[in-house]
Image (cartoon, rainbow, N blue to C red; front, top):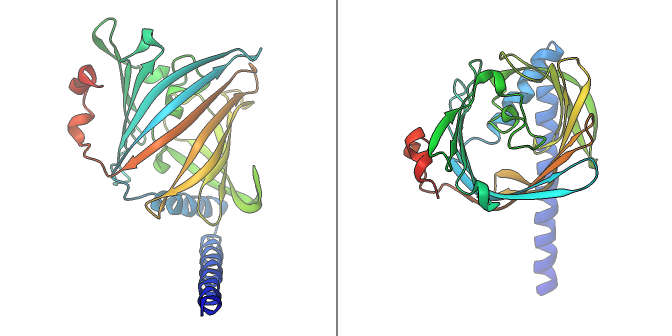
Length: 279
């Protein structure tokens, strides 16, 4: 009896895997029927966005490791909070709160991602007890000394870029998976990049690698995503992001843990007034 039950369970599991593969293949073929690389790229971007709709809000703990060209490290500890705004005409809201090292404890960055308008960002400096607005012209600058720019850490809304499909390739880091290769061109003013090249897997639409090109169209940085896990049977999140600067030799790693979704966060938790009382 037990062996029969086990056999039936295995058949169900195998059947589900085959069904998922067929679904992924069907989705891929549907997306690739566009009449131009641009229309295909936009269709893939929309599917990528749709796959992540409905998380409502999320929080996570994060460790940032900054490494210079000689391998010396500094570590920072923070918390991330995100509030979903599902309309494609507006971006999500996010909040980063620093806890360590002690001299930046309580520093917080509030971001409202926009589409073609400059993202709105405010930095709270507890030592000065004031909120400082980040200029739209400074978004390409390094965020707290890391290899991530301010524009890298706001929500990557699909309307901020034009998208072009460049073909199918083995996924970086996961060569057993197939990836869409996409070129994205910023539409918004003051971006620090001329383009990004993105690899997204065809089955679950997870980004595995992003190459960033500077204003001279030279390769500046590469970001990779590691340790994906699925939450609430839908939302994929990477355990770590790694950003390597090819021109300076510096790198930054972000390690995430304790993801939580659909908490009691509201718009009131993402306001300039709330920055001074974040904990």
